[in-house]
Length: 199
Length: 199
Image 1 (cartoon, each protein chain N blue to C red):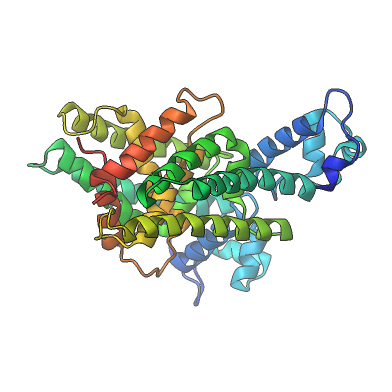
Image 2 (cartoon, rainbow over the protein chains, first blue to last red):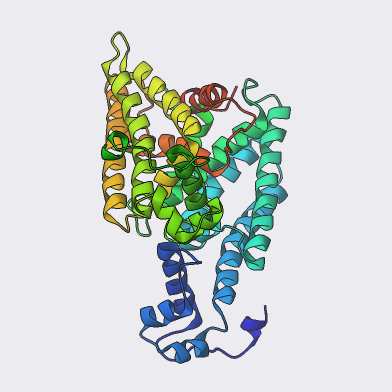
């Protein structure tokens, strides 16, 4: 990551992390395509020329945001796949819980990732990396099914889409600083998915 | 509906239904805010002045699309609430299944509804009507919980958000003419939600 090795570009009051956070908020509000560097400058109270002191380009900010979301999800899956002593079903349950926790802890970046359309090279790249993660999650569902622990009246790939569709739908209503803790949400979603809502 | 009483505005080759369908597709592809009447004219191979022969305004098309989605969902809930001889839990299961079927059968219009931001009066109105439907669905979950039939370790309002979040997430991957029939999807989603994915 070149930008991490380079000297900090931020002026006092706006470090890189703050600029990125405000940019992600704007992208989520107005859409990435609908947000200009000028919009971000206004949001930060900077002139359009001053903003380029902070950020090389809009696409650079998008790339950093998508890297944050994809990096957090990838690391979480790496850890779970490396864990020993888990059955395939325990591994899947851990993956579901952890996906919820990562989503809540990186809510703005994951929201942006899930809304990416693929209109640029950075977005196409993010979509490909997201599909690779979805494939790894689907493989975990198939492994649990192969162990005979999942219901066999629904194809594993459909189970996987429904299950992680429910996880991803959290971005539609969970808000930063919401009342539910990430762990509580993760427990509730995993319980509903694995045991169902009937008593 | 004035436009239904008025003489048809469509020219041969483009009836109102076709223009609306193509407009909804464009809105879903490019975003409503990102689509101009000029874009729709190009899509239909019409000049920008000819398009106004077909549609009074972009907002009018949005209104018709949102009315289609909200109307279908509202009628479905009205029928379920009026049905006799169902327990609260059977009513909820029917509402879940029916929501899936309506979503698949009106996929483009429901997709547009679920992506509305509230940037105009028509969108604000649609969001209010959508919230009213969500409230009716949440009331069905509370009624089933009050009958003691649902797990009591998750608050009914959280169950409701997770459950209908899973339903709504179908718009992210189901495509018109997809392999799964609407009924098969509805059965699978209801089975997962009610009995869970464990065998």
